[in-house]
Image (cartoon, rainbow, N blue to C red):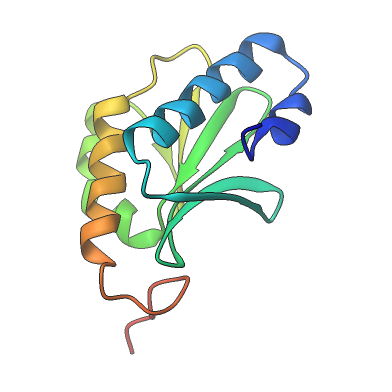
Length: 126
């Protein structure tokens, strides 16, 4: 059983549950070296113990988070795709197509950028 099955079972809307399941399965299949886990009641993926990407679900959207660095780097692409975002996460409306190409860029950026990171979160700049 996948690590996120219990999480998915709590999503009441079956269409939303199915969409979130497809996203998590896509990450799991495309990036088999990432470790999946539930933390802070959300599914997330890590690489050598460092955070790569996490997901959450709200009533009208799901969100992915890759730390605030991702927002700074990919903000123009989020704008171009009409995605709503804040300081640490990006919202994808359940009626939007999942931007898998962009998700891949975010995940691959974090994997490369954090390859030498020894902490769960990026160290904050001083």
